[in-house]
Image (cartoon, rainbow, N blue to C red; front, side):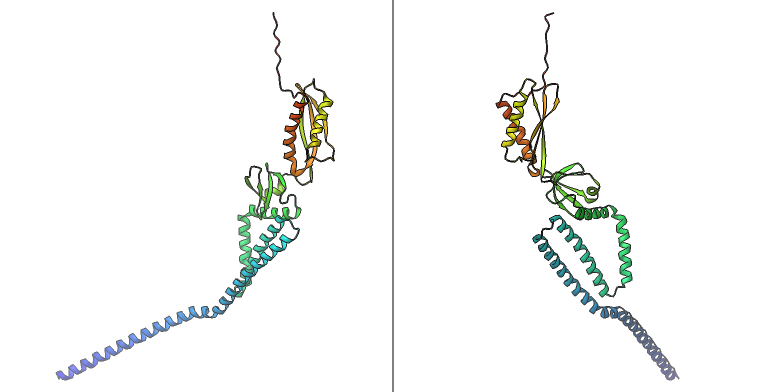
Amino acid sequence: MQTTILTTALETMQTTETQVIDNVVETVGQEVHHASTVLSAILTPIRDAIPSLIIALIIAVIGFVLIKYLLRLLGHAFSRSSMDHIAAGFIRSVLRIVLYVLLAVIVLSVLNVPMNSIVAVIASAGVAVGLALKDSLSNLAGGFILLFAKPVKQGDTVQIEGTIGKVEQIDILYTKIVTPDNTVVFIPNGKVTTAKIVNYTEKETRRVEMALGIAYESDLDAARKVALDVVHQHPLTVAEPAAEILVQNHGADAIELLLRVWCKSTDYWTVYYDLMEQTKQAFDANAIEIPYHKVEVHLSEN
């Protein structure tokens, strides 16, 4: 009897262990199948996308190389042409941006990104960027106006927004001006197009005007002859239009003369300072008095 009970208990235990093992095996099998399904769902798109990724990478590399080569080729072509250096640099800057944006669109299309999505993203980004960078867009539009209208060009001496200097470069957003003391000033293109621009070198020649004073006791004709001789002897003045000296005013202390002489625009300040010094020396050499403000005091014996 005891043997029978023991045998029955052993059989029951074996059956329970077998069921537990079967349950464990079944559970592990289900987990392995689930993990395999998840990995397959992840890896299958990646595996399918590998050819597109490789093609997109190849197109991106080739595109970068071609863009750099094209920009370098354009740079050489512009340097050999008569195109203004500022216009050439501006065109290259704009073309660089356009080509890189076009390359990005091509790469995204190869990756099977829907064009509708690309257009929507570009449009949304354009609106956001336009709102955030409205001043910069104004400067960009100003750059195009400066490029085509050409109120200034490289090497011109101009006055813009109270700044006087030589135009060195017109970039996409800013105009670079170097002042006579070698200070660099960047003025936004939007302000350049709306500001009053004084171009001192647009014309080939420019008139120098100087105020000269002589004493009332001095010979007016002699003073005029001496000043004109100084002008004619200066190597940077031009014969036409002819120089002239006019009586501008009868001042409290002197007869005020106005000397007008023409020279090349690039020689303006050299001629101005030279004549300022040389007329003084010539007047002194010919006993023509240059008066200064004097106060006469009369004392009465009473």
